Image (tube, rainbow over all chains, first blue to last red; front, side, top):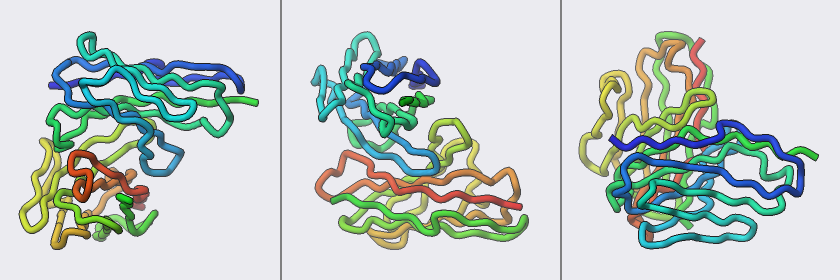
Length: 113
Length: 116
């Protein structure tokens, strides 16, 4: 059974700092991994989706990497801003058709002024 | 594109009553819709998967008679929490799959259910 873990569970950084969020999964036979952002009381916003054949994806200040063989992904946020404060979730797709996503436990990020 | 809506965004009900939550795909036809539950400071747990026109498939431990799912059209799925109790209070999120990106789920904004 796939298990997804995110470390740290919570993180507080001053504005402007670069930071890395970690996601690990137990079964490396995944088709893709996706990073989401969730604001308090809101739904999920997709940030980046990395296919298993890719090593990384970039969108603005966000960069996600994937090391499938070691079961790890990282989300790098450059020059953090208070507006980046949210919970970040990673999810893996073992099916290739998004039939079932396994979510991590999330990292609650707070960027302070 | 690929917008999913939920209604209501929040609902408060008395214990023993039933509550219906709607999930709609606004700009694409969703062949499959998914229902998740999220408790405070926890991750999303899949409750059930529904395909248009067929019965939903429930995850282990989810009571299908308590959480009724109907996916009557390619743009609408409903989750009815029957005889709700305080322990059913949670954040319910739906997602939909289909359209131009059939191998990706698109998530709704969630519904906060509080049972008194």
